[in-house]
Amino acid sequence: MNFFTHLGAYLLMLKGMFSKPENGRMYWKEFTHQSVEIGMGALPIVVIISLFLGAVTTVQTAYQLVSPLVPMSTIAQIVRDSVILELSPTVVSIVLAGVVGSKIASELGNMRVSEQIDALEIMGINTRNYLLMPKIIGALIVVPCLIVISAVLAIWGGRMAGELTGILATDIFDQGLRQNLNLYNINFALYKAYTFAFIISSIPAYFGYHVKGGALEIGRASTQAVVVSCILILLADYLLAALLL
Image (cartoon, rainbow, N blue to C red):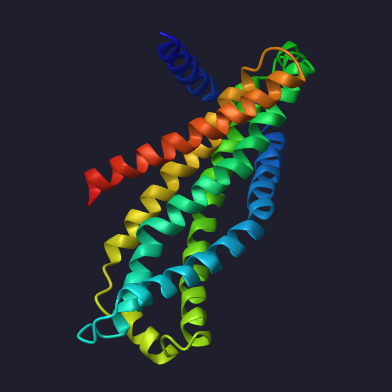
């Protein structure tokens, strides 16, 4: 019963976001602010994680491919497909759920506890539309861009790791990258990116918007938001793979 209560409140929150903005300039300013906060705030950790993801994937793939019958360029193909299909979209999204999700939940929770949201509603502002919509739209635009950057950096990190460790020459790696490339994998990665971006932004927004209590409840809401977001990301990852692959 508690699950359906949360589900109903979540759907009502989403429904309440769709209304005509009271002041388009204010909404645009808030949207650009959220986009910069989400993108620039998470970019450093995304860059670091992506480089090491690609490097570790290259080293471990080379360790497992011990047969002389398998060409070395196969390592680059495995790294490319692993990064595009799974590592960059899923791993980066889980990290963003912790970085971005906790920030959204704590920010909205603090506004709820300090009665800033109540003050905005008294002024006649649709707080769901003004506070939540820019965050969700900003995440839908910025998070896929971060995942594309992550995939590029991960492949480049794998290429550098292969050269520095002497496992794979760069020309052989580049040759493997161009072999048997399925462009649908890139589309599938973007499908996952937009789905995960919506989860990362809307779930923490729900928990933060509906906080009741004080500072302790804000911390609990942030933790719940991150945990639920990670679970839903993994569930959506399986469902998308089962339906689209």
